[in-house]
Length: 76
Image: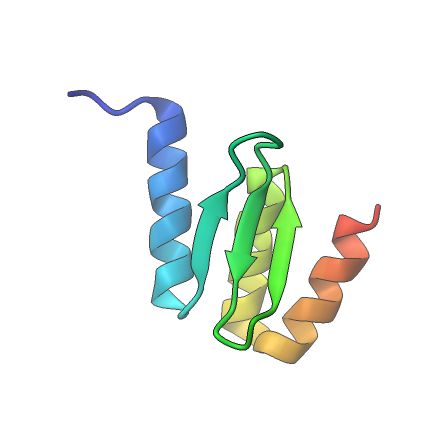
C-alpha cells in the first residue's frame, strides 16, 4: 500500500513529536492536530505547518518558552 503525501506529513509529525516525548493525534471531526505533553498540557491547531514549527521551537527552547510561543501564534 502506497502512502499519500498527507500520510507522509503525518508520519513525520508523529516521529518528531515522539522523539521529544510528546503524543500527537488528529481530531477526527475538526481535523485539528493535538500535541499532548507528559505534564498533561495539550496544544491544538489545524495547521500542520504551525504545529511542526512549534515542535522545532520546543526542541530548541524547552517546554516553558515553547508553550507561551505556541499560545501567541495559535491565537492569531
